[in-house]
Length: 337
Image (cartoon, rainbow, N blue to C red; front, top):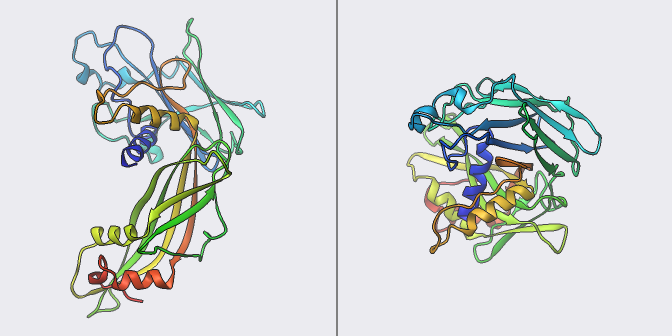
């Protein structure tokens, strides 16, 4: 499960901050597009990463990778479009610098400034769940368009037991369960809890500092094939063990758990396929060479859809609070009412 979550996270990060580091940096001349796009109906803008593999005539691929013109198509050469196959709406995306949009690119093998992305505002291309969207890259000349299709994921709906103000139980002797509906097209989910807590100096009670601790407790959860409801499970004791492992014992302070936020992230078929194929060759007897998966008509990359549900203001049951205050992993952390 940890490996699956890692692949999932790395793939999503590729949109804004990364590139396909597994792709051969230098190749015999051929136009090889690299595309990452993850459509989210709740976003205020949609971004697509469009790059290319490059020819390295001098044999120094790592130096060439730092040259911006080697990574990106000239803006006048290509058009990047999205088409809503239900409404017929077709839009042309504009090239922007992701760093100026709040999405800087991580330093690494590839040039990170500028961080070119293609953008359209959601108001100019609104989406609803279950609509099908086509990506179109026109490269000019006699080259065929590069296309891919994705179905927009619908809203993820936690069941009625998980609403703001609900109390979550983490029993120490059995599993805790989280049930939700992810829509027909969602295939894989990650769940995490954001634990909002404070630390207060006992000698100076007005000195209070607030923190958030992120616990990814269920990763790579496959959508149910038998019912519309998907269930994620975690052994309740893991909750307290995670807190004990990530907070240090401090003298002179007391802590309080204020609330929790449940975040459920779902992904579509193409991301699920990518993760599954990647995992298929990472076992103990594998060659560690990850097979190539893409849903583009040509090139490398993924065009798919994601969705996210955020449920704030969750609390612990009385029994779970007692376990937090007095349990074997957390008793020394000075949690108070």
